[in-house]
Image (cartoon, rainbow over all chains, first blue to last red):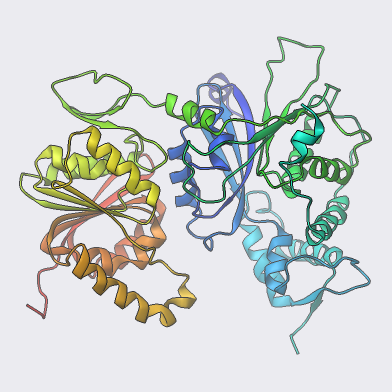
Amino acid sequence: MATLKEILTRRPAAATIRLTVPAGGARPAPPVGPALGQYRLNLMAFCKDFNARTQKYKPETPMSVTITAFKDNTFEFTVKSPSVTWYLKKAAGIESGSSRPGHVTASTVTLKHIYEIAKVKQSDPYCQYMPLESICKSIIGTAATMGIKVVKELE
Amino acid sequence: MSFFSLGHFFKRLPYKQLTRHQNLFTLIKQKPRTQSTTLSSVLIKVSACSSSSSSSSSSPCTSLSSIYPPLAESPYLSDMFSEALLCFGASSTSVDEHDNDADENSDEIYIDSIFPECEDVDECILNAANSIGLKEIPCYEVKMGEQCNWIKKAQESFHPVEVTKGLWIVPEWSTPPDVQATNIILNPGLAFGTGEHATTKLCLLLLQSLIKGGELFLDYGTGSGILGIAAIKFGAAMSVGVDIDPQAIKSAHQNAALNNIGPKKMKLHLVPDRTFPASMNERVDGIVEDLSSHEIRGISETEKYDVVIANILLNPLLQLADHIVSYAKPGAVVGISGILSEQLPHIINRYSEFLEDILLSEMDDWTCVSGTKKRAKEDH
């Protein structure tokens, strides 16, 4: 519930921009440049801010960032951790999921991997209030659709 | 524009990539499907991105934009479609908010999307539309855009900035509001360091308090060269700027020339990127030693500088702490910035073994740490 003050001082939003940027690697060049430049946003400020805030992630992981640009050329942005499929692909060591999920297994991951991925996902603003177990279940479900088997331990 | 002329800008996607798309396609189907409605006007702008980091405005720009005829749509659908586009190859999507009072009848939503040159736009949009269950493919228009456009637009937003009383940072195309003050003329270009960011301001203030005249200054991670130029203007004897980005060195050269600072007063060097992922450190240590000794001989020497400032990012600052501090004379001041207030404890932990008398300055959410290098050293 926004307070009255917030409603009165709410800046009119001009646009919502979605991007995928490697962590710590935002530069004023494409893809960031054209996307933000056309709304006259301060590229440097965004790049510096984004790079500083993604320092805790491994360099070059593709982060999805949503920027809300306001009409007065200011902006706010939220950074989301990479998608579950990306994490699973890295954990399983494969480039792409299986071509026939359910029939052809592309690779395997252990429960420990799932747990680690769930912990990272829990720090995402959207998943903070979900119990870890349900995050794990949804990750296992995603793995199933990619044709990645989940085993207790690697043999 | 005939389809042929557009077609030759796109390569056919290799088979491998298609299978990848199919997997994402099955994945996205799992999400709850909304009623398959039609999308309203989708303006998809496609632009080519040169994958190298230094993209000068002289290279020909290629961007295509597509417009679809308007149809009614719900905002939820536009979100899903933007995310689907990102999955299938768009490098960015943006949705404009329209003033609802202006046209109440039209529920049009425009999605602006930028694609790299090698992507097949039609394929991508087709896949994206299918994956979220749209009945019809929204209309789109593909247009090649000028790379220079966005650079110009971004530069338009730069105005003269007063960092503190008597110190202004003026873009090349503006006249300084106060001719008496110390004016640093900049062409911000594509390098970091325009003077507007809190960390640049903090470093400039620190520099102003430190430079009394005749010092030797090292700007570690010089970007546009702004700190080096400021040091000269405050009275330093010589500035040296180092950076890993060739674009930065280029911008810094230009900016030094704009401020009439010759190569004798300000030297700029491109150095190799020494930050490696932690797991490789042990293996690579040998190589790093060689590089540093080469640098000592060729370019800058350790223990020579009176003031060293590094305004970069947390991870390089932590990894290169020894290296940065080694350039300072014992008793010299080392300034560290580019860190958020929440990252401060890590920096202090790391640098307290080299620096004493640690002082902090804060602006907005950013901090600047400064300390003097410990004098007690076993060798010389």
